[in-house]
Length: 86
Image 1: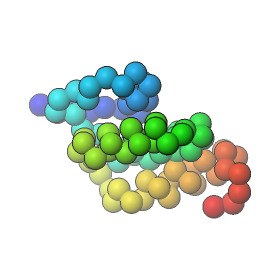
Image 2: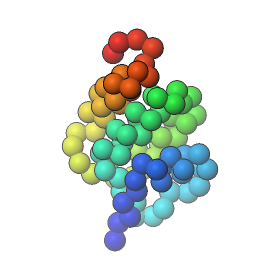
Image 3: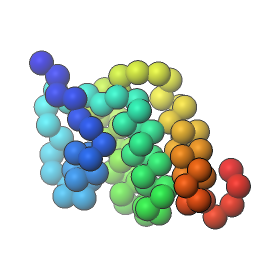
């Protein structure tokens, strides 16, 4: 049985750096939300690297993963969190 992880759980996981739970999966929209959160909070290299490591270790269910970068930019721009236009 798979354990579906949500955005809030993964943010807490990144902040505390514990082990990933076994049999975990995430939805592609969660990937987009996390990337947008990282942009809005101006995460540094270490947290972003941890985020990408999680994405590489946990199966992602849903649409094309490359769309999450576009989602993150659009979401951050829509909330006035980008220094310049995308």
